[in-house]
Length: 100
Image (tube, rainbow, N blue to C red):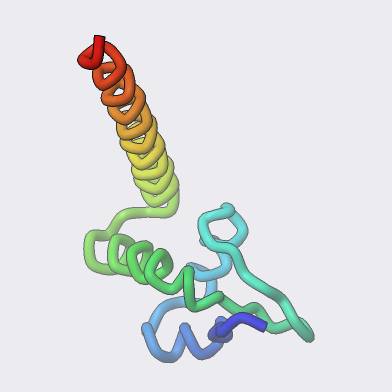
């Protein structure tokens, strides 16, 4: 079983509203495990949760804004990966033609 923290512990530690956590989950921004009617956040996803909490409470970004930011950051990551792949392919092609 992976390491995880319960929703109730997160609420106490981060001093956030339980509805905020539930809205993140309900909108697909966080993945949780449920066991005996207790929701758990996997430690791997803790950094993502902290970002959302900081943006929401410190910068006053609402839930739709969090969704947009999350979507845009994922698209940027995808584009960076595609760019790296294309640069690697270009490098291979250049090496082929330099040998000729």
